[in-house]
Amino acid sequence: MKKGLCILLSSAMLMGTAPVYGNVPEVEQVTHTYRAEVGTKNFYKDDVLQTLDTEIYLKDGYVMLPVRAFFTAMGDQTVIDWNREKRIASVLQGANIITMNVDQNEIQVNGKVLPVSGKMETKDGRLFVPLRNWKHILNACNYPLTDEDIVWNSAEQEAVVKIKESKVTEQKDVRELVLSGEGQAPSYAMEMTEQYDFIENAGDGYFIALKYGKDVPVGVITAGQECDYDVIDSTGKVLIDFTAHSVFQLEYLGENLFYVTSADLREKYVVDQTGKTVFTLPYDRILDYSEGMAVVGDMVNGEYLYGYVDVKGNLQIPLQFTKAEPFSEGVAAVSQGKLEQKKWGFVDKNGKFVVEPIYNACGSFREGLAMVRTSEGVGFVNHRGEFVISPVYKSASNFVNGTAFAVTGENNEVWIIDDAGKKLRKITEVKGGSASAEGNDQLMQVEYIVEGVAGEDHTHVIQNYDKNGAISDDVFRLEKGLSEGLAPVYDNTRKMMGYADETGNMMIMPSFTKAESFKDGYAVVKHLVEKSDGSRDEEWGIIANPLMK
Image: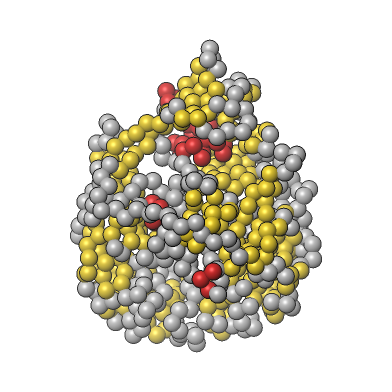
């Protein structure tokens, strides 16, 4: 986790629901009308008044619209994070990430900088963006807006925005999510507190907590003055209290070890759970430990190469690979050679090749099999490098509980296959689009390209599947978020997040504005606090998994 960076930790939300198994869905285009009355709190979607707690206004000839109100009107599942110290908003809208830097007056969508008309500003605790910018923002989010779709009526002092959305009309056989039950009150391991500005569940019972600095200008990286870091346990007890402004970056590596970069960027070292230095790092980077080994990388004779160290920092496998993956089932996927000559194989913990580097790409071993790519396609090999499943597929997921997704090369069919390569069930056929495994390798997203919709040449619709067939967006988010039997879910009635089990039964009542997945029995939650002076702050806490008592 980088310092001062507000990381949006939430499941991606994608438009559309799924079609009948094996069929391309029917799609229609729906136009929604958003109307804002300047000088009032009246903001409408399709003539339905939306919640707005501050007035829309004019500044320098621009209509100023509140970011939160506009995005939440577009969809209840929009996630918005506001870093008040940095004055940066991060918005997860569907599959798109929008960032708005107020002080730099910069807007990015999925990392691409957009042109900005006028100036963004905060007022009454809300972020406002000039109306003219919404065309660029929504175009970048794949909504087809033109200048004619944004209208300013000076006589009525009213702005109208028309947004076209592609919707699936064929709904048969799609498994929908029905939330049930009230859920129990959360069991706090650490009570909600404003002590920290961000908490991350690092795993193994460790949490990285930080407090942002108060006096550093946005975009300026000054040695150690932006964040104070602590490592805490699930109760909030401080295990490692780093000196104020002494750490630039802090990451948990596993094996009770933490990677630290000093505030002046001159020192890189690894400490244990007490804060004691185990070894300094003479390499440019180190990745997480797996099976007692961690990948390290650095420049060697003008070329960036990778090797492996043990938990004491001893170099066990010299820096000699152009790429290296974590160990899994006793071996690691590594590559040799450059660019198009690069070939992949597997080495043991002595650095000896147990599967020769002859493949174009390799995945890690899961359940005794590893995905490999050859010039013919994707298949699976065993630990001896023998093909158990021939390389006849275009793409595939890893095996989980003996089954995997596989996409055929001839006609883009998505199948469930077993670990002997037998086709068990056809899920769908992808026409003109693409398919990719998601999250925990038990979900599949398919992008269909549907021709001739509403006068357009084509439109893109993303559908979700699990290994039983088509699922709705809500089921997709639930299944993707499942960890230790529970997943964070959004309750549309209470406008809060809680936790449900795999059936949709609410286990922890909706009580939070942000809820992360469980890891090692605990989850990080956040709540927005409205203060008496009208300002807002954030409380963070840690809750226990009621299924793991």
